[in-house]
Length: 161
Image 1 (cartoon, rainbow, N blue to C red):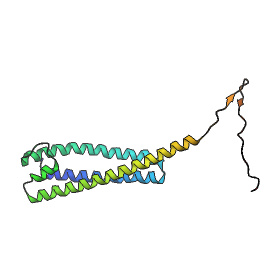
Image 2: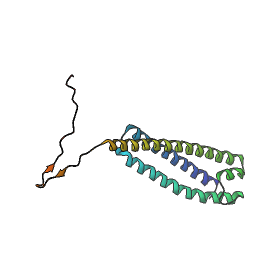
Image 3: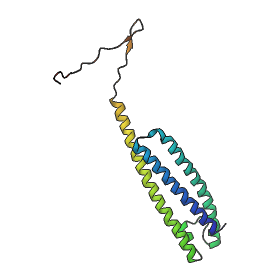
Image 4: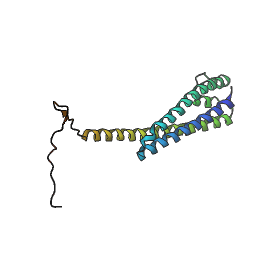
């Protein structure tokens, strides 16, 4: 355990967050192009990256606890607290750059998530409106078992054309 290991873990976490952004952008492209056939695959890939991020968060917690004990702060210290207690300017700069990059990635991911959610809501609304306008006459059966189809509705034809 140590600062080197924590920094390496933060690099891997940043890479996974970038992969998550990429997967969310893939989802967005599929949604905007109306290619919903592939959406389950893209969603599964997003879920896989999220699972890897959860595992990484556990590893990070262990590394933070080790660095925090080494640098004289609480075991459940945040990255900001780690930066504050860093023994050298080099570590402060290293962890500050990690923190800034993680914050930027988190903001970008939140924006993509919100955008994708709007696409999904619009698609859902459109589908509901389309289904609401579909009128199907359910036929019945007569005593012989033949379909009793109601006479067609009156239609207005334009003979002038």
